[in-house]
Image 1 (cartoon, helix red, strand yellow):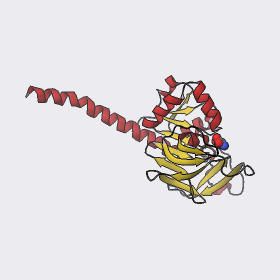
Image 2 (cartoon, rainbow, N blue to C red; image 1 turned 30 degrees about the horizontal axis):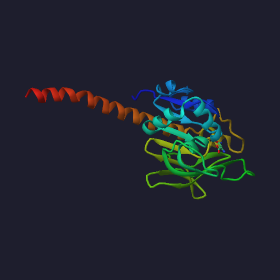
Image 3 (tube, helix red, strand yellow; image 1 turned 90 degrees about the vertical axis):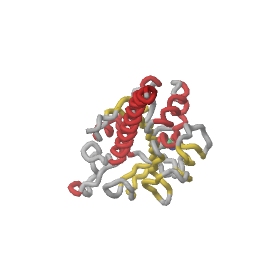
Image 4 (spheres, rainbow, N blue to C red; image 1 turned 180 degrees about the horizontal axis):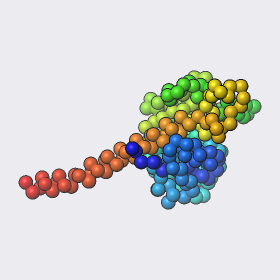
Length: 233
Ligand code: GLN
């Protein structure tokens, strides 16, 4: 059995509590991250939704921008909504600074001010059929590079993408309900009936990356022994 991954949730603003609950539900151990020291102790990280400009200010204030940039280059990192904006290489409407680790262009508040929030159900390549997606003052991925895998789209634009260790969603997966035939017609209770496939997918990315790191460590550890043997011959 694979060990339980420790997944950080950047807890500077936004609904980090919901992400932490979602992670528990997919058998991962959530850990709130507010400092660079805390970031060093986690296997992967979720950057929740919120306001990307506020995130930038808080990251700067906490001295977290550079450590986060470094983390996202090497460890699994999942950005949702404002988190997705922070990960993208290019930000428009207006232009702003970002961590630049996802080869994509993202347009902020792209669905207009009149529609602040929208819930749609779309196909996804995650197992289990269509996924409910909650968009809140959402950005739009207007361009993604050729190395970016599109896992779900809305109106022809990617909304859930992966590039190696980076996962990004323009919606809020912590708010997705699962369809339940027994409750059809009534609004579902998120606590009783959440759809955790996106968190499940990310937790697996973290498990896989940790396993790969373990494998390369043990391969390196066996190297000096071989060298010594070779030298003696
Ligand atoms: N509109 C926000 C921004 O531009 C993102 C909204 C969200 O995270 N729900 O940063």
